[in-house]
Image (cartoon, rainbow, N blue to C red; front, side):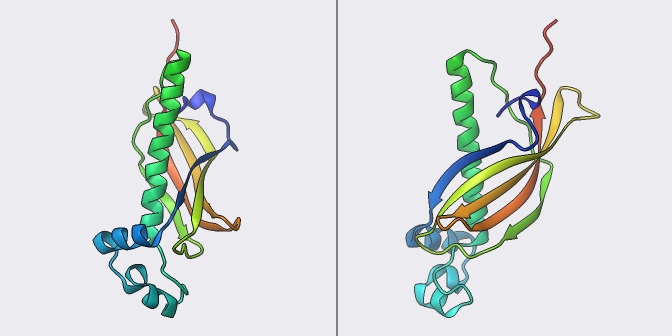
Length: 160
């Protein structure tokens, strides 16, 4: 996580990569989205997806996991440099969640975050509000997943 003052609209950052295996798709689906095309290869082939497809919620959960890991990595790097660590705040929500193309067993998705809007918070002066477009791109360069997230980000403390 960075401070609001260290961000720029348009900044694009690779968050991480994940390969969806048949086992990971089935394991997630069995617990959270037990539809036949997520649980069985043959059912997936007969579906509109044409193969064993990852649940959209699985795709989103992986994105969240990678975003948290990325923020932890950034914090560790800041500590190593001796910089102050920016600790992010909660997210008041997201919009425009889209699953644009199926993610099939064997697909590798690279996730990105691009800052679309930044502003200081009117009611909490120590915080700013960031909107970022989060996307997933498969190994063929196709966008498969997208959402617009809003998050509270800390403002750099004033030195007095």
